[in-house]
Length: 74
Image (tube, rainbow, N blue to C red):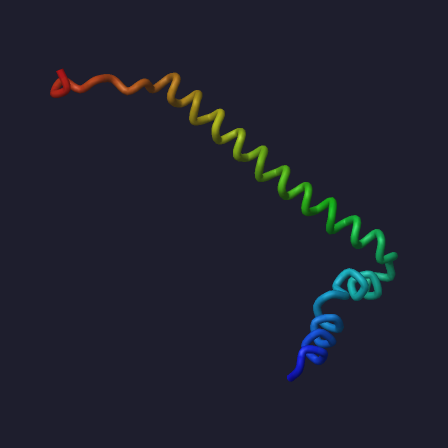
């Protein structure tokens, strides 16, 4: 297999995902691409918000459950 055949294979089977999905559902390609873009931003935003909530919860837990020195540390 030479480079041109590999390039053609990926162009036919890999790079036209949004075009093939749009053809399958009878939609415009631009709408499918916008959906993928918005979905990637939404998933990134959700993971970042979850990270902030967990960090806040750990800070609150540390505030209420302070580590007390042990009897053996005196």
